[in-house]
Each structure stands twice: as structure tokens, then as C-alpha cells.
Length: 196
Image 1: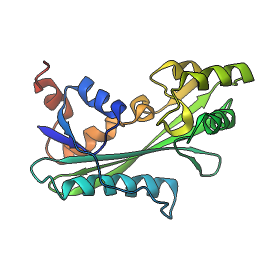
Image 2 (image 1 turned 90 degrees about the vertical axis):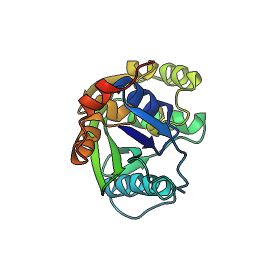
Image 3 (image 1 turned 30 degrees about the vertical axis):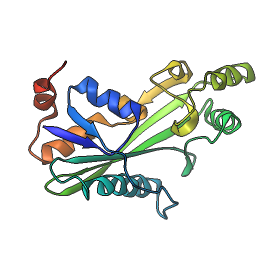
Image 4 (image 1 turned 135 degrees about the vertical axis):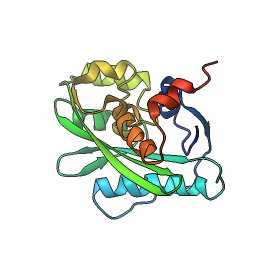
């Protein structure tokens, strides 16, 4: 089985590679403009939009689209920080509190299917020196919420409830469900991939 990943995210690429899934990357032609709806609806719509933008030019393999956002309080969405100042403000807002990481995951194969994953993450309390030191590392670039749990950002995390891989950028459990609906076992597909 080959997938087409409608994303240039190095984190998603790394997860698929670790799973042993054969895939190729196609950059989605999708503009992430504001969409009305709940955070759950927005991440699903964006994931589907990314997948559709690639599927219209790639019909030979299933296309996977993913969109991940960090949600705090009653529904405030924290996207990717624009700069170091925004990253520091996001992390200060998240420090010592729980937030939700939502990922919409869409697979276009025989049918279009889209699901949403939720993982709850609590960060430790951070003082000014810790915030400054983490932001200086630059891991906030391209990361929803301004941190990278798979890098030194792991030191910021007090607890994770749910799919850890979702926080990295690709909910593996839901990927398995979507592939199963296409008659593909993630375990078998990964086990049969050529690991060069």
C-alpha cells in the first residue's frame, strides 16, 4: 500500500516512516482561511480540504490530509506563532494548564472519510527564564501552540491523556481506523513496507 501525504510536515513524514508505511509527499494547494464552526469542525474541514486539493490531481493512491490545532479554555484556538514574541505569549498562556490538541484526519480512497482526534496535554508551570530559554531554541517554528513535544518541548509537559502521536502531528490510532475502512491493516502494511 502506498499513501499520498498531503502535507510537507516533517513530523507527519517521520511518523509514517517509523510505522513502515510507504508514502510519497504532495504539497496541498489549500489556503487556510478562517472557517466558521467549532474547533473540531474546522480541523476536519481543513484536513479534508488539504486531501481534496491533492486527490484531484492524484487518483492512483489513497490521499491523507491532516490539520492540527491547539485549543485552550472554552474553544480559543492557538495556531502556529508568527514570531518568537507570539510563541512566548502562547507558552505563557498554556503554562501550568491543560489544553486540547485536536487533529482532523481525512483519507480519500474509495470514499472520503474524516475523523477528529483529541489529546489532552498539561504543561508544567514555567517561569520567565524557562520561557525565554525554550523560545530561544526555536522549536516553536511551524508548531501549533508553540512547542514540540517530540523534542526538548517534552520537558514542558506534565501529562498527556490520549494519543501522543496526535500531539506530534498525526493521530496513529485514527489513521489505523481510516485505513481499515479501506480494507488495509496499518500493522500489515507497515510490516510489509521496504525498510531500506
